[in-house]
Length: 229
Ligand code: BV8
Image (cartoon, rainbow, N blue to C red; front, side, top):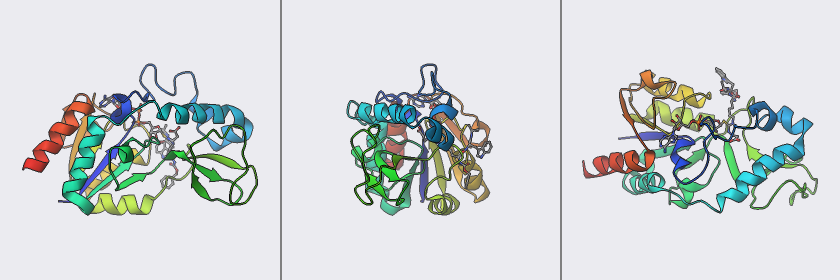
């Protein structure tokens, strides 16, 4: 059975990574267009770097939770028949042991050079505008996909969703496209669809089955049911 799992901020909430739209969410205090758009970066690069440098630093204070670990276990069983597509820019899936992970919105621990377009692993701050190790110009930006920019690996994602037998959405509000549209692609290709989320998402009516509750409980239960089956 080919499975595609789409994850959002909700899967990392129990690890202590703030979500976006919840009361004290990441967007709280920041207008999206002030920190997550190319225009914002053009106008106020230091403010945008402060937002992402703080999130990158905070990553070292959090750990994967049982939901991340359960998906890593599922990959051990399914191998290439499982693909995790995440909207998250944290590295908790990989730190839990998942290998088949697509970061469609980029990664915090990566930098993108606007000069030579190189992408490179990056742990430190970018707010001090360090030179690019490849081309030497100080044009390194957070390697994240901002609003108005094209997400990464769309062809690979749409092919996998189109071939999937089961499409599972975990911890996402279904408010941001094109990710929010993947369930329709799965349905059009005859896949079964399952939502695991704290509360119904904006696209909840598009799922054959819903389980509402914390991912740290729902995902290990779901994986256990699949692995024993
Ligand atoms: C694009 C990186 C063209 C940066 C992010 C169609 C209609 C309307 C608008 C559009 C449209 N198409 C495009 C748009 C514009 C825009 C968009 O969608 N706007 C929205 C606001 C309406 N989209 C774009 O600009 C995209 N680019 O369209 O390019 C294109 C498209 C296709 C092909 C070619 C070209 C680019 C969007 C990417 C922006 N970058 N992140 C950063 O992280 O700072 S988006 C960012 O916000 C996240 O990555 C994520 O995608 C989104 C947040 O959503 P969630 O992850 O779901 O988080 P949220 O807080 O909202 O919800 C958490 C959920 O978890 C809740 O449901 C909650 O109940 C649940 N939960 C909480 N705790 C738990 C839990 N569940 C389980 N357990 C728990 N413990």
